[in-house]
Structures are given as structure tokens and as C-alpha cells.
Length: 333
Ligand code: F6P
Image (tube, rainbow, N blue to C red; front, side, top):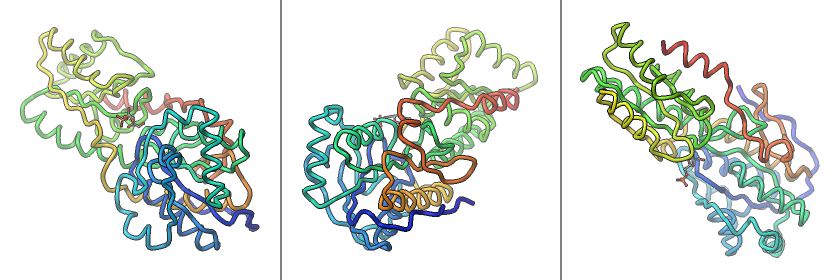
């Protein structure tokens, strides 16, 4: 089980803020709760920034107490709301953000988000000497420096639950279903969902398959007596890929059905795994930040919580584990 590492004993900051940024992920609320309650336990004041960096620039910053985060551990989404803030790409805007925080007496920031969110935090830290620590929160699980991200486990469980339901109707009607999962340019959700859902084929951006190859794998199943099949498709850069593949299959005489799971994977009750990981990460992020650490993300390596410098995280997308893709493929045959 994931445990809290030894955290710095000294306390260098008295007041910190927390925000969520980028796509929401189930478990972000558990992380916010841990940030607030661990900070308060250390005698540190906490502010919540509403709507990510956009809200920060608008001064939407409010004090949080233990009750502010009551009853949220089981809720998906983020009580702090979130945003993707284009303006934060500008140096002058990041300077203004650091000034806004300083004027409130805030000395450090916890950012829960993904690669883009950490880039903003890292630059704000470098340019304005404003301490920041990141917590990886994205369903995609594509952040370098960590084996896991908050929301991934929940998203995979949601997708597997959907596949179990689709399989009932697919086998009743002897149909081929293309089930499209999220993950942008990363196949982590697709592979894990494919293995756990027993999919007949898994299509990921990291290993493109041509239409004839897809047809061949369907036909292999038919020859073994399969009357239905589930093809898990990672959305790739442009959602709707499953429909485009279905059109190609239809032209070859198949009658596939398409189910795009989309944002259903982003919401819902976080799993126990995500709640636990978010709680440990939230507490550790505060411990490191108030102990004087900065420009780093808390992550999981070899099953343990570690602190990883932003320089080893940002812009370095985590590659899909080829052994998992291989497993998905051989179990599907
Ligand atoms: O990064 C998380 C994610 O859910 C991706 O899997 C997906 O491609 C993207 O966000 C969708 O973004 P939006 O919610 O802005 O449509």
C-alpha cells in the first residue's frame, strides 16, 4: 500500500494556495482535501484558487478550512473548478499571477493537473521565484516521472464497466462494437481497458494498425467461432476515430456499431485506489512545499511516493509500456 514518505520537519512557509488546472480527473477532490487538512495540521493557512490559472488572474482566491473540504472525497470533478488558460503562456501574465498571490500573503502554490499546468507552474517559479509543487491529475496517465496519475484508475474502471455492458448486447446480436476511449495521443487507457475488459482488439496511437490488419483480426476471431467482438479504440488527436474505422469496415461488408465513451470517463465517484493515492500525494505535496522544496512534482516510482523535478517531467510524455500492449494483443487472440 502507498504510504506517506518522511517529509521535511522544518516549516518555511506560513500560507499556501491550491488550484486545479487542465482536464478534471476523479480524485482531484480527495487531493484538495488532503492538501487543506495536512496544511492545517501543520499550522499553515490554505487558500483555494477557483478556476485554475484563469481564476488566479481574476483574484478568485478564498481561504479554506477543514469544513470547506468536508464531504468531497467521494465526489468526481473538482470543487475548485478548472480551466485551460492560454494567457498563462505569457511571461508578464505569470509575473502578475505571482504578484497577486504575494499580495494575499501566499508563499507557495500546489498545482493539481497535467503537463501544461506544470509548465505554467515551473515558469512562474523560475521567473518570479515563486515556490510551486505539482500533483499529477489526469485520466490519461501520460505524465513522465510517475507510474500513475489521479483519475486514471477510475477512468479505466468506468470504461471496463461500459465494455461489460456492451458485451452483453454485442453477443446477443452477434455484433462488432468499436468502443472509443479517451487518452488523446496516449494509449494507456485503451490498453488497460482492453486487457481488463477482454477486448478482441486494442487500437492505440503508438502502434497504428491499417484497416486490412483490423479486418484480418476480426476474421481470425470469426474463424475460431467468435460471433461478436469488441474493438477498443484510443481517440487519438481527433475524437471520432472509431466512427471513421467503422465506416471503413462497413465498406468491407461488416455492420459495426460505435460507442464513444467520451467524457463519461472523466466523471463519477473516484475508486478507492485514486482516493488513497490522491490523499497521500496531497499531504506529501504540502509537506515538501512548506519544507522548502519547489519546482517538482510528487509522483509514484516503484510503488513509492517520490519527488521528481519538473525538468524531468515537463514535455516528456510517458511512453506506453510495450509489454502491456503485447499482453493486450496476445490475450485478445
Ligand atoms: O487530458 C484529459 C482528456 O480527457 C483527454 O483524454 C481528452 O482527449 C481531453 O482531455 C478532452 O479535453 P476536453 O475536456 O477539453 O474536451
